[in-house]
Amino acid sequence: MTADRTKRNCLAVILAAGESTRMKSSQSKVLHPVAGRPMIAHVVDALARAGISDIALVLGRDAEKVEAAARNAAVSSSVHIQTERLGTAHAVLAAREAIARGYDDVLVVFGDTPLITEAPLVAARDGLAHGADVVVIGFETADPTGYGRLIVENDELVAIREHKDASEAERAITYCNGGLMAIDGRKALDLIGRIGNSNAKGEYYLTDIVEVVRAAGGRAVAVEAPEEELTGCNTRAELAVIERLWQQRRRHEMMLDGVSMIAPETVFLAYDTEIGRDVTIEPNVVFGPGVTVESGAVIHSFSHVEGAHVSAGAEVGPYARLRPGANLGEGAKVGNFCEVKKAEIGAGAKVNHLTYIGDAFIGARTNIGAGTITCNYDGINKHVTRIGADAFIGSNSALVAPVSIGDGAYIASGSVITADVPDDAVAFGRARQENKEGRAALIRARNQAIKDAKKKAAP
Ligand code: UD1
Ligand code: CA
Image 1 (cartoon, rainbow, N blue to C red):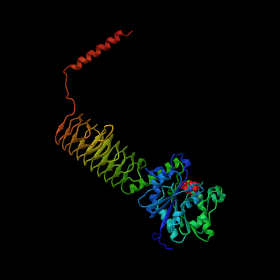
Image 2: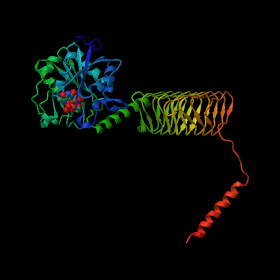
Image 3: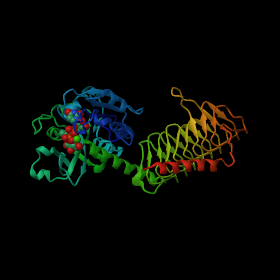
Image 4: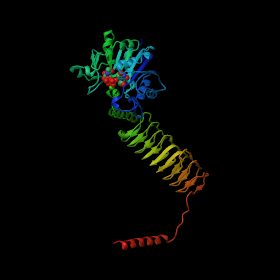
Protein backbone atom coordinates (compact mmCIF):
# COMPACT_ATOMS: atom_id res chain seq x y z
CA MET A 1 0.00 0.00 0.00
CA THR A 2 1.22 3.47 -0.85
CA ALA A 3 0.55 6.48 1.36
CA ASP A 4 0.60 8.76 -1.67
CA ARG A 5 -2.93 9.25 -2.99
CA THR A 6 -1.70 10.40 -6.38
CA LYS A 7 -0.07 7.02 -6.97
CA ARG A 8 -3.30 5.14 -6.23
CA ASN A 9 -5.94 4.55 -8.87
CA CYS A 10 -9.59 5.09 -8.16
CA LEU A 11 -13.02 4.09 -9.40
CA ALA A 12 -15.91 6.37 -8.52
CA VAL A 13 -19.31 4.71 -8.33
CA ILE A 14 -22.13 7.20 -8.81
CA LEU A 15 -25.45 6.02 -7.42
CA ALA A 16 -28.32 7.40 -9.46
CA ALA A 17 -30.82 4.57 -9.76
CA GLY A 18 -33.47 6.26 -7.66
CA GLU A 19 -37.03 6.63 -8.93
CA SER A 20 -37.04 10.37 -8.12
CA THR A 21 -40.62 9.93 -6.91
CA ARG A 22 -40.67 13.09 -4.83
CA MET A 23 -39.55 15.24 -7.75
CA LYS A 24 -42.91 14.43 -9.41
CA SER A 25 -41.17 14.58 -12.75
CA SER A 26 -41.23 12.79 -16.08
CA GLN A 27 -37.46 12.49 -15.87
CA SER A 28 -34.83 11.28 -13.42
CA LYS A 29 -33.89 13.95 -10.89
CA VAL A 30 -30.21 13.82 -11.83
CA LEU A 31 -31.18 15.24 -15.24
CA HIS A 32 -32.67 18.36 -13.70
CA PRO A 33 -30.41 21.35 -14.25
CA VAL A 34 -28.42 23.34 -11.74
CA ALA A 35 -26.88 26.49 -13.27
CA GLY A 36 -28.06 25.31 -16.68
CA ARG A 37 -26.48 21.87 -16.59
CA PRO A 38 -27.75 18.46 -15.43
CA MET A 39 -27.09 17.78 -11.77
CA ILE A 40 -25.13 14.64 -12.51
CA ALA A 41 -22.70 16.56 -14.75
CA HIS A 42 -21.72 18.66 -11.73
CA VAL A 43 -20.90 15.50 -9.79
CA VAL A 44 -18.80 14.09 -12.64
CA ASP A 45 -17.01 17.43 -12.91
CA ALA A 46 -16.06 17.36 -9.21
CA LEU A 47 -14.73 13.81 -9.66
CA ALA A 48 -12.69 14.84 -12.69
CA ARG A 49 -11.24 17.76 -10.75
CA ALA A 50 -10.30 15.36 -7.97
CA GLY A 51 -8.25 13.50 -10.57
CA ILE A 52 -10.57 10.51 -10.93
CA SER A 53 -10.86 9.21 -14.46
CA ASP A 54 -12.86 5.97 -14.09
CA ILE A 55 -16.54 6.14 -13.28
CA ALA A 56 -19.22 3.50 -12.88
CA LEU A 57 -22.75 4.86 -13.24
CA VAL A 58 -25.45 2.91 -11.41
CA LEU A 59 -28.66 3.82 -13.16
CA GLY A 60 -32.35 2.97 -13.25
CA ARG A 61 -34.83 5.09 -15.17
CA ASP A 62 -33.71 7.24 -18.15
CA ALA A 63 -30.37 5.41 -18.23
CA GLU A 64 -29.50 6.53 -21.77
CA LYS A 65 -30.20 10.18 -21.10
CA VAL A 66 -28.35 10.11 -17.80
CA GLU A 67 -25.36 8.46 -19.43
CA ALA A 68 -25.29 11.20 -22.07
CA ALA A 69 -25.63 13.93 -19.44
CA ALA A 70 -22.75 12.43 -17.45
CA ARG A 71 -20.41 12.32 -20.44
CA ASN A 72 -17.17 14.18 -19.77
CA ALA A 73 -14.03 14.18 -21.86
CA ALA A 74 -11.84 13.76 -18.76
CA VAL A 75 -13.40 10.49 -17.59
CA SER A 76 -14.32 7.10 -18.99
CA SER A 77 -17.52 5.66 -17.64
CA SER A 78 -19.40 2.38 -17.66
CA VAL A 79 -23.12 1.95 -17.08
CA HIS A 80 -24.65 -0.57 -14.67
CA ILE A 81 -28.38 -0.97 -14.37
CA GLN A 82 -29.83 -1.64 -10.93
CA THR A 83 -33.09 -3.35 -11.79
CA GLU A 84 -34.47 -3.66 -8.27
CA ARG A 85 -33.98 -0.90 -5.76
CA LEU A 86 -32.90 -2.75 -2.63
CA GLY A 87 -30.71 -0.12 -0.99
CA THR A 88 -27.41 1.72 -1.38
CA ALA A 89 -25.21 -1.36 -0.75
CA HIS A 90 -27.18 -3.33 -3.34
CA ALA A 91 -26.77 -0.39 -5.72
CA VAL A 92 -22.98 -0.38 -5.38
CA LEU A 93 -22.93 -4.12 -6.12
CA ALA A 94 -24.67 -3.43 -9.43
CA ALA A 95 -21.25 -2.08 -10.45
CA ARG A 96 -19.54 -5.30 -9.34
CA GLU A 97 -17.93 -5.83 -12.74
CA ALA A 98 -16.26 -2.43 -12.68
CA ILE A 99 -15.06 -2.79 -9.07
CA ALA A 100 -13.68 -6.24 -9.84
CA ARG A 101 -11.29 -4.71 -12.40
CA GLY A 102 -9.20 -3.91 -9.33
CA TYR A 103 -8.71 -0.43 -7.92
CA ASP A 104 -6.80 0.93 -4.93
CA ASP A 105 -9.73 3.18 -4.05
CA VAL A 106 -13.46 2.90 -4.62
CA LEU A 107 -15.30 6.14 -4.02
CA VAL A 108 -19.08 5.99 -3.71
CA VAL A 109 -20.94 9.23 -4.45
CA PHE A 110 -24.59 10.14 -5.07
CA GLY A 111 -25.84 11.61 -8.32
CA ASP A 112 -28.12 13.99 -6.46
CA THR A 113 -25.50 15.94 -4.46
CA PRO A 114 -24.26 18.37 -7.14
CA LEU A 115 -22.59 20.84 -4.76
CA ILE A 116 -19.82 18.45 -3.80
CA THR A 117 -16.33 19.77 -4.59
CA GLU A 118 -13.05 17.99 -5.02
CA ALA A 119 -11.72 18.81 -1.52
CA PRO A 120 -13.75 16.25 0.52
CA LEU A 121 -13.29 13.62 -2.21
CA VAL A 122 -9.54 14.10 -2.03
CA ALA A 123 -9.64 14.05 1.79
CA ALA A 124 -11.54 10.76 1.76
CA ARG A 125 -9.01 9.18 -0.60
CA ASP A 126 -6.15 10.51 1.53
CA GLY A 127 -7.72 8.66 4.47
CA LEU A 128 -7.40 5.39 2.54
CA ALA A 129 -3.83 6.23 1.55
CA HIS A 130 -3.08 6.59 5.26
CA GLY A 131 -4.38 3.18 6.16
CA ALA A 132 -8.14 3.37 6.77
CA ASP A 133 -10.32 0.77 5.06
CA VAL A 134 -13.40 2.96 4.92
CA VAL A 135 -13.58 6.77 5.02
CA VAL A 136 -17.02 8.34 5.33
CA ILE A 137 -17.68 11.99 4.43
CA GLY A 138 -19.71 13.54 7.23
CA PHE A 139 -21.10 16.95 8.10
CA GLU A 140 -22.33 18.83 11.14
CA THR A 141 -25.89 20.09 10.97
CA ALA A 142 -28.39 21.90 13.17
CA ASP A 143 -31.17 19.59 12.03
CA PRO A 144 -30.02 15.98 11.63
CA THR A 145 -33.54 14.57 11.12
CA GLY A 146 -33.57 11.89 8.43
CA TYR A 147 -29.80 11.47 8.14
CA GLY A 148 -27.68 8.55 9.24
CA ARG A 149 -25.77 9.51 12.42
CA LEU A 150 -22.01 9.04 12.66
CA ILE A 151 -21.03 7.33 15.89
CA VAL A 152 -17.38 8.21 16.54
CA GLU A 153 -15.24 6.93 19.42
CA ASN A 154 -11.53 7.77 19.83
CA ASP A 155 -11.27 9.17 16.28
CA GLU A 156 -12.66 5.98 14.82
CA LEU A 157 -16.04 5.64 13.19
CA VAL A 158 -17.78 2.76 14.97
CA ALA A 159 -21.17 2.83 13.24
CA ILE A 160 -23.60 4.78 11.09
CA ARG A 161 -27.12 4.55 12.44
CA GLU A 162 -29.94 5.38 10.03
CA HIS A 163 -32.48 7.77 11.53
CA LYS A 164 -35.23 5.15 11.51
CA ASP A 165 -33.05 2.69 13.43
CA ALA A 166 -31.48 5.16 15.86
CA SER A 167 -32.09 5.27 19.61
CA GLU A 168 -33.17 8.49 21.35
CA ALA A 169 -29.55 9.15 22.44
CA GLU A 170 -28.20 8.47 18.93
CA ARG A 171 -30.75 10.82 17.40
CA ALA A 172 -29.24 13.66 19.46
CA ILE A 173 -25.99 13.31 17.48
CA THR A 174 -25.55 16.15 14.95
CA TYR A 175 -22.60 14.66 13.03
CA CYS A 176 -24.25 13.04 10.02
CA ASN A 177 -23.47 10.83 7.07
CA GLY A 178 -23.25 12.76 3.83
CA GLY A 179 -23.67 9.45 2.03
CA LEU A 180 -20.34 9.64 0.21
CA MET A 181 -17.51 7.32 1.18
CA ALA A 182 -14.18 5.90 0.07
CA ILE A 183 -13.54 2.17 0.45
CA ASP A 184 -10.35 0.15 0.08
CA GLY A 185 -10.80 -1.11 -3.48
CA ARG A 186 -9.29 -4.55 -2.84
CA LYS A 187 -11.74 -5.23 -0.03
CA ALA A 188 -14.83 -3.42 -1.26
CA LEU A 189 -16.70 -6.33 -2.87
CA ASP A 190 -16.05 -8.65 0.06
CA LEU A 191 -17.11 -6.05 2.65
CA ILE A 192 -20.26 -4.94 0.82
CA GLY A 193 -21.17 -8.56 0.13
CA ARG A 194 -21.40 -9.16 3.87
CA ILE A 195 -24.00 -6.46 4.45
CA GLY A 196 -27.44 -7.74 5.41
CA ASN A 197 -30.88 -6.15 5.37
CA SER A 198 -32.23 -6.59 8.89
CA ASN A 199 -33.24 -2.98 9.56
CA ALA A 200 -36.36 -0.82 9.70
CA LYS A 201 -36.61 -0.49 5.90
CA GLY A 202 -35.46 -4.02 5.01
CA GLU A 203 -32.83 -2.49 2.69
CA TYR A 204 -29.16 -3.29 2.15
CA TYR A 205 -27.60 -0.19 3.68
CA LEU A 206 -24.11 0.75 2.47
CA THR A 207 -23.69 2.47 5.81
CA ASP A 208 -23.54 -0.93 7.53
CA ILE A 209 -20.09 -1.33 5.96
CA VAL A 210 -18.69 0.46 9.02
CA GLU A 211 -19.73 -2.28 11.43
CA VAL A 212 -18.80 -4.98 8.90
CA VAL A 213 -15.26 -3.66 8.42
CA ARG A 214 -14.71 -3.33 12.16
CA ALA A 215 -15.93 -6.88 12.76
CA ALA A 216 -13.28 -7.98 10.23
CA GLY A 217 -10.59 -6.12 12.21
CA GLY A 218 -10.42 -3.13 9.85
CA ARG A 219 -10.63 0.59 10.51
CA ALA A 220 -13.23 3.19 9.53
CA VAL A 221 -12.92 6.94 9.97
CA ALA A 222 -14.93 10.02 9.10
CA VAL A 223 -13.81 13.25 7.43
CA GLU A 224 -15.88 16.38 7.76
CA ALA A 225 -17.11 18.48 4.83
CA PRO A 226 -19.22 21.65 4.83
CA GLU A 227 -22.93 20.80 5.13
CA GLU A 228 -23.67 22.82 2.00
CA GLU A 229 -21.60 20.51 -0.20
CA LEU A 230 -23.64 17.51 0.86
CA THR A 231 -27.05 19.05 0.23
CA GLY A 232 -29.08 16.40 -1.53
CA CYS A 233 -31.93 16.90 -3.94
CA ASN A 234 -35.16 15.00 -3.39
CA THR A 235 -37.81 17.63 -4.21
CA ARG A 236 -38.10 20.69 -6.45
CA ALA A 237 -37.91 22.84 -3.33
CA GLU A 238 -34.52 21.30 -2.53
CA LEU A 239 -33.51 21.80 -6.17
CA ALA A 240 -34.19 25.53 -5.73
CA VAL A 241 -32.10 25.57 -2.53
CA ILE A 242 -29.23 23.89 -4.39
CA GLU A 243 -29.50 26.42 -7.21
CA ARG A 244 -29.39 29.28 -4.68
CA LEU A 245 -26.33 27.83 -2.92
CA TRP A 246 -24.58 27.23 -6.24
CA GLN A 247 -25.25 30.79 -7.39
CA GLN A 248 -24.03 32.27 -4.08
CA ARG A 249 -20.84 30.28 -4.25
CA ARG A 250 -20.06 31.18 -7.87
CA ARG A 251 -20.86 34.89 -7.50
CA HIS A 252 -18.60 35.03 -4.49
CA GLU A 253 -15.74 33.39 -6.40
CA MET A 254 -16.21 35.80 -9.30
CA MET A 255 -16.20 38.86 -7.06
CA LEU A 256 -12.98 37.63 -5.46
CA ASP A 257 -11.60 37.30 -9.00
CA GLY A 258 -12.26 40.98 -9.74
CA VAL A 259 -15.83 41.16 -11.07
CA SER A 260 -18.05 43.92 -9.66
CA MET A 261 -21.66 43.07 -8.91
CA ILE A 262 -23.80 45.81 -7.43
CA ALA A 263 -26.52 43.43 -6.23
CA PRO A 264 -24.97 39.97 -6.57
CA GLU A 265 -28.09 38.23 -5.26
CA THR A 266 -29.91 39.32 -8.46
CA VAL A 267 -27.29 38.09 -10.93
CA PHE A 268 -27.74 34.57 -12.27
CA LEU A 269 -24.80 32.71 -13.75
CA ALA A 270 -24.54 29.54 -15.79
CA TYR A 271 -22.10 26.73 -15.00
CA ASP A 272 -19.69 27.95 -17.68
CA THR A 273 -20.08 31.74 -17.49
CA GLU A 274 -16.66 33.38 -17.81
CA ILE A 275 -16.25 36.96 -16.74
CA GLY A 276 -13.02 38.96 -16.81
CA ARG A 277 -11.62 41.50 -14.39
CA ASP A 278 -13.13 44.92 -13.91
CA VAL A 279 -16.37 43.87 -15.52
CA THR A 280 -19.38 45.50 -13.86
CA ILE A 281 -22.62 43.60 -13.73
CA GLU A 282 -25.58 45.70 -12.71
CA PRO A 283 -28.60 44.31 -10.85
CA ASN A 284 -30.95 41.79 -12.47
CA VAL A 285 -28.85 40.20 -15.16
CA VAL A 286 -29.27 36.60 -16.31
CA PHE A 287 -26.55 34.59 -18.04
CA GLY A 288 -27.45 31.44 -19.96
CA PRO A 289 -24.78 28.92 -20.96
CA GLY A 290 -21.86 29.76 -23.23
CA VAL A 291 -21.06 33.34 -22.26
CA THR A 292 -17.66 35.02 -22.04
CA VAL A 293 -17.29 38.65 -21.03
CA GLU A 294 -13.88 40.30 -21.31
CA SER A 295 -12.33 42.80 -18.95
CA GLY A 296 -13.82 46.22 -18.45
CA ALA A 297 -17.16 45.46 -20.11
CA VAL A 298 -20.38 46.62 -18.47
CA ILE A 299 -23.57 44.59 -18.42
CA HIS A 300 -26.38 46.95 -17.48
CA SER A 301 -29.53 45.94 -15.65
CA PHE A 302 -32.21 43.61 -16.97
CA SER A 303 -30.09 42.06 -19.68
CA HIS A 304 -30.36 38.42 -20.73
CA VAL A 305 -27.17 37.02 -22.25
CA GLU A 306 -26.73 33.52 -23.66
CA GLY A 307 -24.13 31.92 -25.95
CA ALA A 308 -22.51 35.32 -26.49
CA HIS A 309 -19.07 36.87 -26.41
CA VAL A 310 -18.63 40.41 -25.13
CA SER A 311 -15.19 41.92 -25.79
CA ALA A 312 -13.24 44.30 -23.61
CA GLY A 313 -14.89 47.60 -22.87
CA ALA A 314 -18.17 46.74 -24.59
CA GLU A 315 -21.54 47.70 -23.08
CA VAL A 316 -24.74 45.72 -23.02
CA GLY A 317 -28.18 46.92 -21.99
CA PRO A 318 -30.05 47.98 -19.99
CA TYR A 319 -32.76 45.64 -21.28
CA ALA A 320 -30.67 43.96 -23.96
CA ARG A 321 -30.94 40.40 -25.13
CA LEU A 322 -27.88 38.68 -26.55
CA ARG A 323 -28.71 35.30 -28.06
CA PRO A 324 -26.37 32.51 -29.16
CA GLY A 325 -23.74 33.62 -31.64
CA ALA A 326 -23.80 37.28 -30.65
CA ASN A 327 -20.21 38.49 -30.75
CA LEU A 328 -19.50 42.04 -29.65
CA GLY A 329 -16.16 43.60 -30.59
CA GLU A 330 -14.11 45.86 -28.34
CA GLY A 331 -16.00 48.88 -27.13
CA ALA A 332 -19.16 47.93 -29.04
CA LYS A 333 -22.55 48.90 -27.61
CA VAL A 334 -25.85 47.09 -27.66
CA GLY A 335 -28.40 49.20 -25.86
CA ASN A 336 -31.95 49.11 -24.57
CA PHE A 337 -34.54 46.82 -26.14
CA CYS A 338 -32.12 45.42 -28.68
CA GLU A 339 -31.87 41.76 -29.61
CA VAL A 340 -28.75 40.36 -31.25
CA LYS A 341 -28.50 36.80 -32.55
CA LYS A 342 -25.67 35.10 -34.49
CA ALA A 343 -24.09 38.39 -35.43
CA GLU A 344 -20.74 40.12 -35.24
CA ILE A 345 -20.90 43.65 -33.97
CA GLY A 346 -17.60 45.30 -34.94
CA ALA A 347 -15.31 47.18 -32.57
CA GLY A 348 -16.85 50.47 -31.50
CA ALA A 349 -20.08 49.82 -33.42
CA LYS A 350 -23.33 51.00 -31.82
CA VAL A 351 -26.69 49.29 -31.78
CA ASN A 352 -28.31 51.51 -29.24
CA HIS A 353 -32.08 51.36 -29.34
CA LEU A 354 -35.01 49.08 -30.22
CA THR A 355 -33.30 46.96 -32.84
CA TYR A 356 -33.13 43.37 -34.04
CA ILE A 357 -29.85 42.21 -35.55
CA GLY A 358 -29.79 38.55 -36.61
CA ASP A 359 -27.46 36.63 -38.96
CA ALA A 360 -25.37 39.71 -39.64
CA PHE A 361 -21.88 41.15 -39.83
CA ILE A 362 -21.52 44.76 -38.78
CA GLY A 363 -18.22 46.54 -39.37
CA ALA A 364 -16.23 48.67 -36.94
CA ARG A 365 -17.67 52.02 -35.80
CA THR A 366 -20.90 51.56 -37.75
CA ASN A 367 -23.98 53.16 -36.21
CA ILE A 368 -27.26 51.31 -36.34
CA GLY A 369 -30.21 53.67 -35.86
CA ALA A 370 -33.17 53.09 -33.56
CA GLY A 371 -35.67 50.57 -34.79
CA THR A 372 -33.46 48.96 -37.44
CA ILE A 373 -34.48 45.42 -38.28
CA THR A 374 -32.51 42.81 -40.20
CA CYS A 375 -35.21 40.83 -41.99
CA ASN A 376 -33.27 37.59 -41.89
CA TYR A 377 -36.02 35.02 -42.25
CA ASP A 378 -38.22 34.38 -45.28
CA GLY A 379 -40.39 31.86 -43.47
CA ILE A 380 -38.20 28.95 -44.58
CA ASN A 381 -34.54 30.02 -44.72
CA LYS A 382 -32.29 32.40 -42.83
CA HIS A 383 -30.26 34.96 -44.78
CA VAL A 384 -27.26 37.12 -43.98
CA THR A 385 -26.95 40.89 -43.80
CA ARG A 386 -23.46 42.39 -44.25
CA ILE A 387 -22.73 45.94 -43.27
CA GLY A 388 -19.27 47.43 -43.69
CA ALA A 389 -17.25 49.71 -41.40
CA ASP A 390 -18.18 53.33 -40.65
CA ALA A 391 -21.64 52.93 -42.14
CA PHE A 392 -24.74 54.73 -40.88
CA ILE A 393 -28.12 53.03 -40.87
CA GLY A 394 -30.95 55.56 -40.47
CA SER A 395 -33.64 54.85 -37.91
CA ASN A 396 -36.50 52.51 -38.67
CA SER A 397 -34.82 50.82 -41.60
CA ALA A 398 -35.62 47.29 -42.68
CA LEU A 399 -32.67 45.45 -44.21
CA VAL A 400 -34.06 42.57 -46.23
CA ALA A 401 -31.46 39.81 -46.33
CA PRO A 402 -29.53 38.60 -48.18
CA VAL A 403 -28.16 42.10 -48.60
CA SER A 404 -24.81 43.92 -48.31
CA ILE A 405 -24.17 47.51 -47.37
CA GLY A 406 -20.71 48.90 -48.10
CA ASP A 407 -18.16 50.72 -45.96
CA GLY A 408 -19.13 54.30 -45.20
CA ALA A 409 -22.57 53.95 -46.78
CA TYR A 410 -25.64 55.86 -45.54
CA ILE A 411 -29.13 54.46 -45.39
CA ALA A 412 -31.92 57.02 -45.24
CA SER A 413 -34.29 56.64 -42.29
CA GLY A 414 -37.31 54.51 -42.87
CA SER A 415 -35.79 52.69 -45.83
CA VAL A 416 -36.60 49.18 -46.88
CA ILE A 417 -33.30 47.98 -48.35
CA THR A 418 -33.65 45.07 -50.75
CA ALA A 419 -30.61 45.63 -52.99
CA ASP A 420 -26.90 45.90 -52.17
CA VAL A 421 -25.54 49.38 -51.41
CA PRO A 422 -21.99 50.22 -52.61
CA ASP A 423 -19.30 51.80 -50.41
CA ASP A 424 -19.91 55.47 -49.60
CA ALA A 425 -23.32 55.54 -51.36
CA VAL A 426 -26.53 56.93 -49.87
CA ALA A 427 -29.56 54.69 -50.30
CA PHE A 428 -33.15 55.91 -50.13
CA GLY A 429 -35.56 53.04 -50.00
CA ARG A 430 -38.76 54.94 -49.21
CA ALA A 431 -41.53 56.95 -50.89
CA ARG A 432 -40.65 60.60 -51.62
CA GLN A 433 -42.35 63.11 -49.32
CA GLU A 434 -44.98 65.46 -50.80
CA ASN A 435 -46.36 68.57 -49.04
CA LYS A 436 -49.91 69.78 -50.00
CA GLU A 437 -50.14 73.46 -49.04
CA GLY A 438 -53.27 74.34 -47.01
CA ARG A 439 -54.74 70.83 -47.28
CA ALA A 440 -54.77 70.28 -43.47
CA ALA A 441 -57.10 73.23 -42.85
CA LEU A 442 -59.57 71.89 -45.46
CA ILE A 443 -59.62 68.45 -43.85
CA ARG A 444 -60.17 69.97 -40.42
CA ALA A 445 -63.14 72.05 -41.63
CA ARG A 446 -64.73 69.03 -43.33
CA ASN A 447 -64.37 66.87 -40.23
CA GLN A 448 -65.86 69.60 -38.00
CA ALA A 449 -68.88 69.86 -40.32
CA ILE A 450 -69.50 66.11 -40.07
CA LYS A 451 -69.36 66.27 -36.28
CA ASP A 452 -71.79 69.25 -36.14
CA ALA A 453 -74.30 67.52 -38.44
CA LYS A 454 -74.29 64.44 -36.21
CA LYS A 455 -74.99 66.56 -33.13
CA LYS A 456 -78.00 68.26 -34.82
CA ALA A 457 -79.50 64.94 -35.90
CA ALA A 458 -79.28 63.51 -32.38
CA PRO A 459 -82.70 63.48 -30.46
C1 UD1 B 1 -28.47 8.05 2.63
C2 UD1 B 1 -27.66 7.38 3.73
C3 UD1 B 1 -27.75 8.24 4.99
C4 UD1 B 1 -27.24 9.63 4.69
C5 UD1 B 1 -28.03 10.23 3.52
C6 UD1 B 1 -27.40 11.54 3.10
C7 UD1 B 1 -27.76 4.97 3.35
C8 UD1 B 1 -28.36 3.70 3.78
N1 UD1 B 1 -28.20 6.05 3.97
O1 UD1 B 1 -29.85 8.04 3.05
O2 UD1 B 1 -26.96 7.67 6.02
O3 UD1 B 1 -27.36 10.46 5.84
O4 UD1 B 1 -27.98 9.36 2.38
O5 UD1 B 1 -28.19 12.17 2.12
O6 UD1 B 1 -26.88 4.98 2.51
N2 UD1 B 1 -29.88 4.61 -4.59
C9 UD1 B 1 -29.80 3.72 -5.63
N3 UD1 B 1 -30.30 2.49 -5.46
C10 UD1 B 1 -30.86 2.08 -4.31
C11 UD1 B 1 -30.96 2.98 -3.26
C12 UD1 B 1 -30.45 4.26 -3.42
O7 UD1 B 1 -29.25 4.07 -6.68
O8 UD1 B 1 -31.28 0.92 -4.25
C13 UD1 B 1 -29.32 5.96 -4.76
C14 UD1 B 1 -30.38 7.05 -4.76
O9 UD1 B 1 -30.82 7.36 -6.07
C15 UD1 B 1 -29.64 8.24 -4.16
C16 UD1 B 1 -28.63 7.57 -3.22
O10 UD1 B 1 -28.49 6.24 -3.67
O11 UD1 B 1 -28.94 8.98 -5.12
C17 UD1 B 1 -29.04 7.64 -1.77
O12 UD1 B 1 -30.22 6.92 -1.55
P1 UD1 B 1 -31.38 7.45 -0.63
O13 UD1 B 1 -32.48 6.47 -0.61
O14 UD1 B 1 -31.73 8.85 -1.01
O15 UD1 B 1 -30.66 7.45 0.80
P2 UD1 B 1 -31.09 8.27 2.06
O16 UD1 B 1 -32.26 7.66 2.71
O17 UD1 B 1 -31.16 9.72 1.71
CA1 CA C 1 -31.32 11.04 -0.19
